[in-house]
Length: 287
Image 1 (cartoon, rainbow, N blue to C red):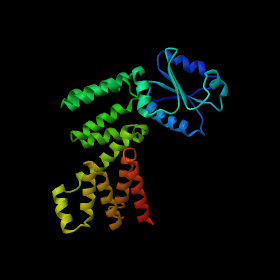
Image 2 (spheres, rainbow, N blue to C red):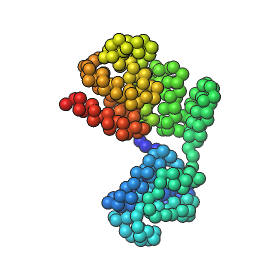
Image 3 (tube, helix red, strand yellow):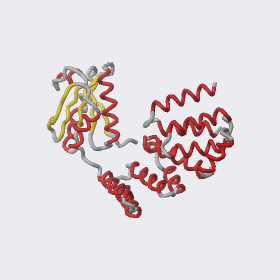
Image 4 (tube, rainbow, N blue to C red):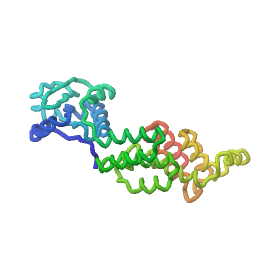
């Protein structure tokens, strides 16, 4: 279940939703589904609602279905937002804004989740080499908000960075599907997958020597792809896996295709164009 507060306003629930503005900012977003700018604004605001989960309420008003609400609010064009906090309208504007503008609007009024503050402290401690303190802060954050899966993903990352692959894998496998499907979850799942491949592969120097003698050696190509994926060379990793797929798609019971799908998933949020191109290349090799 998402921690993001996103709801649709109707005449029946208007008072109830606005009542929450006593403790949380309520961003009223007037929109129309056939209005392109409205859809752009929806996408940006829903993204921020997911990112700032529970720190503000995104209250969407379909102006076409509820013209009386738009009229009563003095809204004659969409998209249009009104930011309400503590019962007062503190900002309003017509037109789609940039993501940075929406952030600037919201951030001064966000009610920060205490577990997020502990997360930041844990990340700082870890960056300063204080692993035990970081883990303790992560544990406190998890107690403060057991539903904040980002806390557990942080610990997975810490385990990975300190060479505890088994602990990272065991913890990740226990997390809910929502955590797995988040952008960070997809990234970490890919890192776990390629870390396991790297663990069973030769070292990079041996891989390179083998490929100099036989550029089509499947074991070396597989290990090289894992190394490249783990060292922030996504395009080279993808091309290496596509080459292996072309050479022997049945290698290790279809491992090249499985690794490509894992890489696509890992990069879907950070490199969407690269993923689209890679999927097309794999499809062309399949058929």
